[in-house]
Image (tube, rainbow, N blue to C red):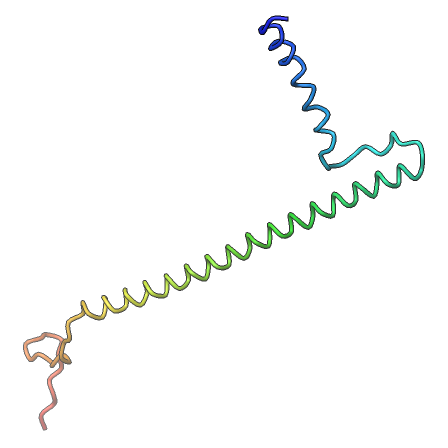
Length: 116
């Protein structure tokens, strides 16, 4: 055979090699095709084990996400508190210290003390 024919045969046979390995991937199996009870029971138990592992994995991932979100919320609350303190400080600094207002005699609404 020439090199081109060998390459063509190799490329044709290559996809079939991957099909055999894909059967070993764990997952849900159809157990209704099993006729013997012990094989059907084993198949169902395999499905149960797979689903329990999947549930445990998903629960762990969800808990990690919740913990990360709680940590982020705590950090954001601390940042908001720091920023609020800075805003309060800036607002206090921007207000000039004014002495108490004295009644002005020229003000039209000001009451004059009654002289007796």
